[in-house]
Length: 345
Image (tube, rainbow, N blue to C red; front, side, top):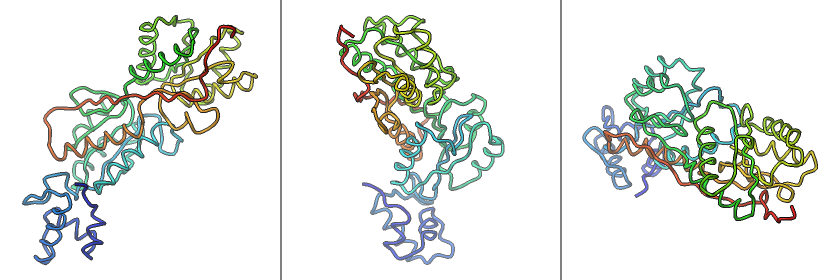
């Protein structure tokens, strides 16, 4: 049964949301016995499991899940990945009457003060960390007696994690390019210190070996970061270095980098989806938000956010003694940017 939110219960019973919150937390001082029992009985009928001091499921008094970004990201920066991840978190938590709050970025928060504040907040339900952070930083966050989940990074035994299946994504994309008759493939990665960047490179190198593709180091290129302007510059450098021997398909570590690559290729008169194929190893909105739409293989960022929120909710119900590392499936989205290569090309 889907639980109603505190706001909905308050509206249905004609009482304040604050009063509903107090009743569900087992706080009855100053509340008429009849009202207290009516609120709790109605909540129990609509999906809540109540104990002597409130709910034994995730208490509705636990209203907030905090999230942090890895350095150097800021919430004000446009993010091709973390915004849809947050949307998935928000949607999942909202269904259970909780909401998200931004706690800051790894390099801008006083972690000692944050741990103290979160530990003493009776309405705090748990923390989600988006991206790879320093071990010491995460160890401090783990001191908060609430569930802790990381997205796109794994810290075995310390906290829960939710990760994309980079191996499956690379395998799907390699198979797709082979079916389109592409054998001369370049890989465009990133030097950014990210577990995801490293995992995608390793996964595509493995997929290339598995399917008999030749991917020597000379065909692997690195941008300083995986942003759009880095893609433009990297594409320009490759074309200058390779001349007309630039391969028939380029695989990019992410969609923003791929968008910059497409910008530069088109500026130089190359037709993406005809003269050259471009694909990306993620499943983010940037892949399909403008023409040409990019062929992509990856895990839905919204699904990553939803699963991270579910781990917070589930630990509130079961209090598991073990930590869970989830790897979510990838999918292939074949779009305009890849084409069937003919031998005459």
